[in-house]
Length: 205
Image (cartoon, rainbow, N blue to C red; front, side, top):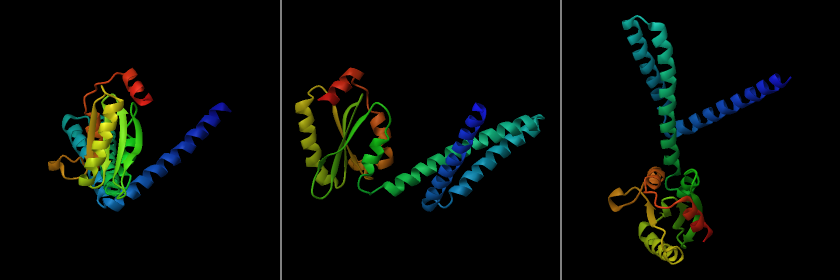
């Protein structure tokens, strides 16, 4: 009886995953109409190459199986990247987009959205982790400067020994702005300067 119950749970989970994949594909296709052709093309090329090598060396079955597995893996990677790119494209320019990215940055970070805001709805979010305090501003870069400066000054008074980094979300990288899709990578590449207890102490303050 227990075995049947477990099987039923697995069967119930599979349609849920397939439904989620289908939904993600539909959303991605709206922003990237060629995603299906590209993903299918990658799979066919990988499988074809491995199968061709298999015939050349006399092991078409083994290489065919390996090619099938690698084709699925390559398709999943390509689809994931294009889906992520499409998602960021849809989020870009929307209010609160940076906060959504920060909320999904991963373990080890404590995120506080909208710690500072002005009447024009330019917003500064705060994240605290091993890299210190990171202030992420989204909105007009010129209007964000005083908001970020005031928040950095406040953090310097409360947490003297904790480094504070500010990031302005935008597409003008020559002016030091960071595109939305690169915010997470930028933050994770910052040097880890605090220990776990120091991060806890900073959050407690």
